Image (cartoon, rainbow, N blue to C red; front, top):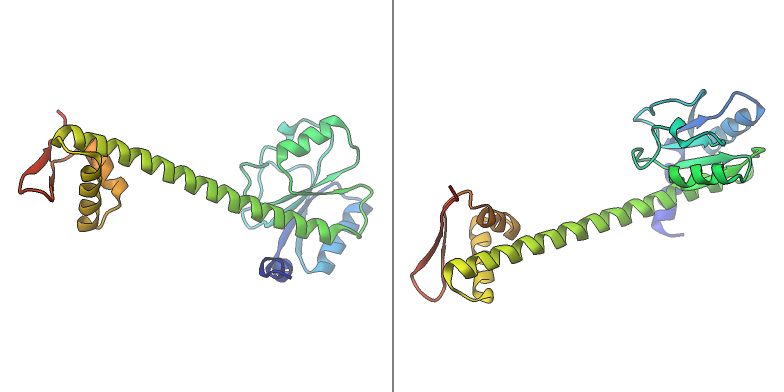
Length: 212
């Protein structure tokens, strides 16, 4: 088993699970099974308008009601949701998709499958979060590259130098000031302060004065 899989199993006994379902024998069956797994379980009904921040996972009954009845759902809710569905009605499927659930169980609720649904929901959710973080990092990297490229062009126009020399000036300035090239580039682009960069080929300086 992978380290990620082992971690998912180890965390079961510390999970705080919220079950959102009417009070009946099926809810009792689900709650008892989750407790047998080792989870700390709380229940709510009718549908809550907010979710306590300490909740780790939700098992929620999704009926054919409008998705507006679930104001706390993802992407606003940063925890996995397991949908409890009774009918494969198009409206229910749409609601499930809009919630962004990472697992589901069908009604009538049985003990078999609850553990699998719980582990899979958390595994898929964790994978999605990792991918979202990577995408966000890539977007920031692309944004930084665009800002740096813009600053290079500014230096080229101001100092009458080539792109390679301008880029090297940025790099050296960032190193000497212990700042990122993006921060230096933004200072140049915004022209918010006087910035002096010494070229490596002469003792001349390039001065960028703040715009008035």
